[in-house]
Image (cartoon, rainbow, N blue to C red):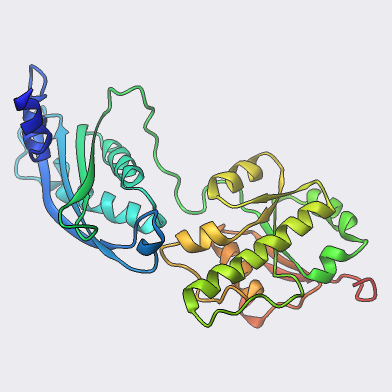
Length: 310
């Protein structure tokens, strides 16, 4: 038991050796790799970076012949650091466990990689290091598949609805037309025509402005049962594949974005345009509100709604 406790706090390399198979595999390792990153589930961890340390060991299948000093024939250390950088850049995460799983999965996509030890520790959350360690193998009953590349999957039409359009008696007819279009439909709205509370504090104001948009999203959902409010990328991907009309609740995707929008929460059209780019939209439409000039890089047009009806 004492040996197991000792090993629990050893570097992953020692654990790899202690738990190796009868025919040990070669190993490559990354030690004490520190990155400044925004991560964490607590409010105190939002809006600021902290030091996160990575220790990773990859057990690799030995080559059948001599390496011949050819870097192209081995699993490069760069693949390990690239896996870390790629997953950190994909989205803001709350849990080290999620980050460790994604890094392990990406590394195990490499042909030579057989088993991987991933230890991640936060260095600034207390007097010691707080972390998680996982071990994953290609023999695990998990099917490792290549992560989707940006732009894979359906390309939606993102449609911004003004408040007048939401209240219009023509709403149902517009939705009928959108459903017949080639691309799945993602609806965006702005805040209702009532003043949101003002805090004078940028971070809290952003939250309030985003929540005001989400309140209006539920107003739209009440107007037509086809409009389903969604907040996560997973929900959006599912909805697009199954023909569901989604109304975007922006808080989670905006706040979790590594490279978030520069637009303020109250600038709903600019926020919707950013969302369209994130979703690799095939088209951006607006019903009841003119679009700014910077939409030229999107396939964009303004739906000529009956102004009298609005």
